Length: 335
Image (cartoon, rainbow, N blue to C red; front, side, top):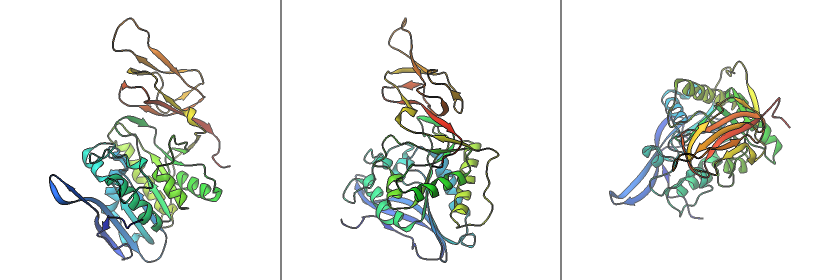
């Protein structure tokens, strides 16, 4: 496989604080010899572990982007033992457009891994992370939220893995992040995710969902910033005491039945609250036909007892949209 077309303007092995770019050459109508410029910060102080902190994997998820931009402006080399690599907007074209996917090739970065140096811009970005940045790190934190189409109860998550020791460390990191909810997450389409690339390389991976609705709030930013600080302490890169919530609940997502998806289109009426508890068989949503009157809505029911982790944000819903996600409350996530 040929080298990546992306080049970095930072020296990953130099001590100190560096702000620069990952430069991806592109040629288009407005710039014949142009480049996608992805901001990156590297903070290094001697030997020690490396944490790779990423946001903006989807361009309309602002909690992680904001928290990492603030961290990049504030973290000093004196506070660090080892190295912190910060990429607040992995999919820079999508972030600039305020969209989930890239306007350059409609690429969904988090469905494009491991990537391809000969592919479109999105696959080229995925390839650079897969072959260059992830191998540098020991710990990876990827900050997500619901974007414009989902509202999600803030949580940090790990995944069930064949490597039980890696699973244990990742779960420890998810709990240390310090959100009020920690989850063992089931992904509907894990094969092309960034998470899968990181875990397949044997690196500790924590992912999050930190709100949504295509915005952020003081509360969601506070959770995000505290979680990033906690993660760096968990990784042994910064000093301090991990700030834990007064109470932390544990949730298991065992399979795809956690996702309630629409088989109709129309106007959505939610009948359950985000963060609320539901019982199996309980009505969690109704969808109303907007093409005529005199038609009863279609009711959607919970397939399990559990906690409402996520809900669709816009009331307009199409076939295939996820409208509710329900996780099973458990006493422990350890196997």
